[in-house]
Image (cartoon, rainbow, N blue to C red; front, side, top):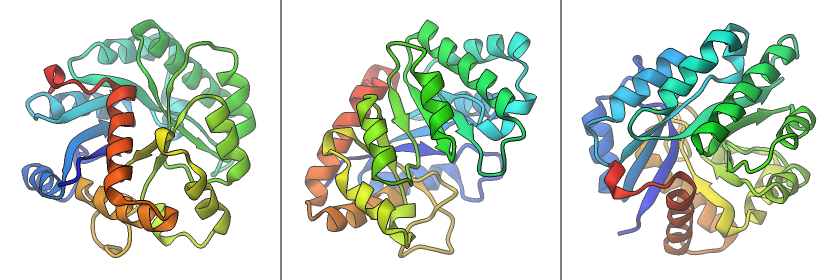
Length: 260
């Protein structure tokens, strides 16, 4: 059986509608043996760290989504973030980044929060889960002020120019169910162009359920569908993409068995 990793999901959410034990078992049944639960607020990040504590093959990341940046008070919340980053089984900072899709009203707050996340990750020697949407220029301006950053641009859904920048900066590319239902040819061309050694699979569950499961709650087992779609799109074997993407995830997030 293939061995896959869901590098980005939110099955720890309080309102996730499916039983956690059944979701994790269903994922393992199709070869999704490792799962990262990604925090989106400080409270949610704490929940993620607690959720994974007694679950083999699950890890957490801690961070505040850009949409919550206006509530992130650097003077006090950066310390709380650092505390969470030191919890057992925390393997990355994020998700963090910039998102101007709803407008740029809180640009300054998003930048301050992003910088606090970056600085926390550097202090803790952790990689990042970056969320970037319609804000690439500002993101790279900030990113380039720091050295030694590693991580993934999660839910990548841009074109080849943006992909080239991501790769030039040494980051991984997280692809999910969006690719199975997008009508944007530029997105699909970019997905085809991601080097296998920089590819990560994710679901973003409960969001972005891939075809042919649209209309159902997304869950980690759907990584298998994402892998199958991308293998067909790229004219590569599922087994090879699974092998390489899993190796990438293990390397980036240091997913060692002692943490499981």
